[in-house]
Length: 264
Ligand code: SF4
Image 1: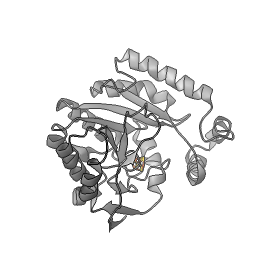
Image 2: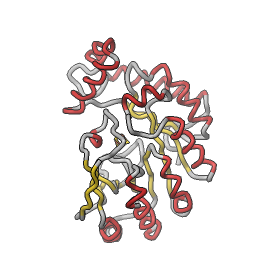
Image 3: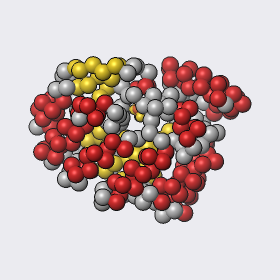
């Protein structure tokens, strides 16, 4: 991975559609592109991580011009990639949000968020840890450089032990690969004291679709016809499948007493 320091012109993006999943009004991504290499994600295709070195200055300016609202940190690129150890941009963003009294919702797969525990307790924060599978072998195929499922669950548990609002996102749901694990995943979330479990289906668009299909061809060739049928002429799986997954996860959330939306 290569890192490039850049000056950005703007950092806050307004969320224009209603965000019923993360409940955000704006989003901020301290880094551009991501080193965790998830094969279903556009952010992993570039091998250069752009580090927005003037982020504090721009963020301060922009926060003074917008209405207060929840800022989603990491909706496009993970804010706690290992590059955070060196440049601390996410830490800087949190400090700035604290100074200006803005709430945030952080999305990450990384235990590095634990370095910011003291700061997170001082602002209005929600943290969602995302995962796709409890099985290391599956994770190594689809998210080769991301933290292990065990590390992610321990991170979630640790956040909750410190009294922070936090939950798990099963995202994306990998069709025909993860269904058999769904009950165990919700159980594991409950065991880690997650307050909620969010989920979203896998979307396959453009280059990412070709890339993902190549991966299925390599590791799960017998599933290709199922993918062809499920995604026939669409970037989303068939609506019937989405509804079935929603219903199954709702049932498990009820069983393990976890909300299936952010309850605050
Ligand atoms: S960790 Fe998130 S942003 Fe990074 S490659 Fe994976 S899905 Fe994309």
